[in-house]
Length: 144
Image 1: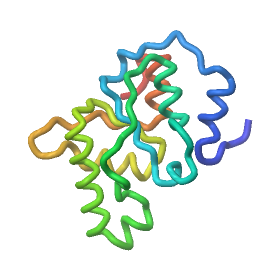
Image 2 (image 1 turned 120 degrees about the vertical axis):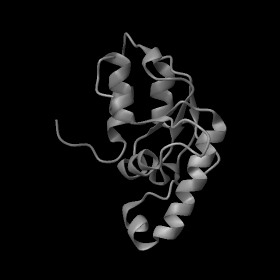
Image 3 (image 1 turned 180 degrees about the vertical axis):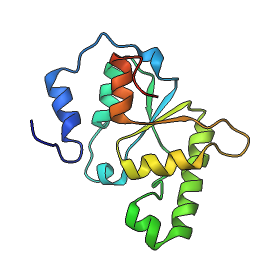
Image 4 (image 1 turned 30 degrees about the horizontal axis):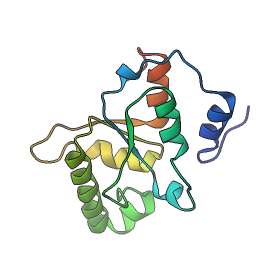
């Protein structure tokens, strides 16, 4: 099979009937699902990421409270101060949610959240790419 652009691979998993057995306990709950800016525009209803995680028995919730993580590569380079401020607001929203895991399908967002650690006075959530989270569900010994 060829490479898939964007979130086409999640649609393929859904249409193929992503099947277990699943181990939802491998993802510390609750799990916030970050919808990257590129996925939010034109989206209707829960994202494929949210649907796949919920179908696997994960306590997955949409990440609300910050419109952008500030991690888009050109944005991060062209407007580092604004990017840092957006990242801080997003991290504060994650901390306020009480989530123990944050899942995103965008590599730039993943780097932004991973580099930030936890908000002051809180433990950093586990930050995972969606592919890694899904792999853990079916293969608990997958890389952390």
